[in-house]
Length: 545
Image 1: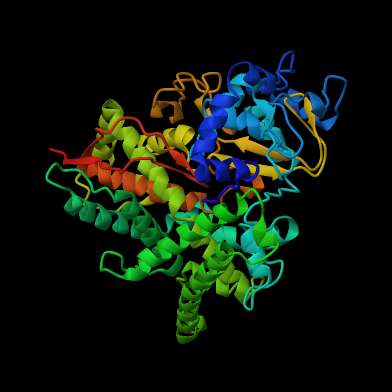
Image 2: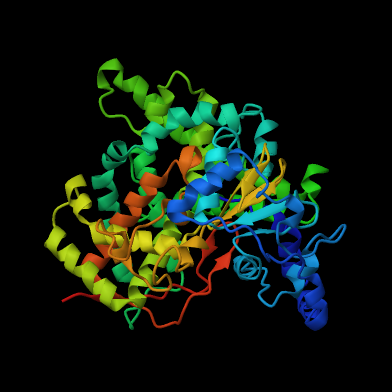
């Protein structure tokens, strides 16, 4: 559920959105012979660090850089110019599209290899990696200094706020000791499988209610409405809210607050992207209109969370010490002596903000994948019939554990269509990646979806094959670092278990009753901070006989 900064793509994004004509002109002007000039350093003779069983080679090289480790100036990548860095290369690239930046990254992997440098104006030097061996070593070597330069605007707002405490802006933005101070206290409530399983029956009831609602939204062709994506967002919040506050938020009863909170979360990330991807960070110099709007939205979400926290405080006071057997997450956080009153508010704000769109989009892509692969959908139906029977019983942890193919379908979707496709680390020491010394101070961008789409890591990678995730691994062993949609290590997504359980539950309940069809061609996802479908999700939802 956690979000990723797109750092070095600020100017590219801005120019592409504001001046599309200039983008097209640049693509033509820089074509042909000129393009040969700007391609930069090829990966000829680059030291290949294999993945899989040879991961130890990368680790050894990084721990003790030897004569085989090449200097940073030899890292392959396009040419860089003073002031504009590699922007001309990006503008001239045939894959350039400001809404689909990931296509340029994929093209660079083909042109330069699994490690390349691609700098953008006004940003720190940036290296991109996609090899599982390098990803593994990066996360292990930055375990203590796991700095993700992300959400700086939110930090600026919360560090200068009447309610928030300075330098305690939350686990989305902080790192180091302050990040760990909060993370180690909150993760037992949202990250432990046994704790998350306690909420399964409640999540299941939400899923059943929403599936019934969606059945009533279909048109005469049995297709879901064009705004079905919004329905997924509201389902995600209703399910998450039940876990956090131990109460239904009331979307199905018409409570407008649900839509408002969903909009707050989406506005926060839209504004963060707009501010932090701008070619000039004006918000650092003066309070821009977008920065003011972000501050206002943060305050609106704070007000909503504050009301829920006050209700929890009143509930605790009314119950007394003898009525604390069953506490919701808010109440547990409030009773934690190592968390301040402000810590609880910030964590809940971050959980609501980051816990909606990634889960909703995971489900969106999974449903489309199943609709596009009817033979896999049929296997899923067989499992659901065998495990859930007539579906009258609410899901239990035992039933959930038996839904192995259901889980495999979601995992296979995340392999190629993870909503979050980039994470990053700032280096605090020279690190060898792919045989090159990447200097201290560089930003390393991890392309989460690249390894998952390559045959060398996943046989028949272009195919939707959920079977590869089953225990016996019929398509061969899986390298853990080749598919990490929730990141990995100490700073993995704190809401991963919640998101997975929500996704498995809604997919199981929807496919138990219905067969899905998709008649609108392949998706060409759009990327902002997360990846979203580029078309209305007008899935055909047909009752199963």
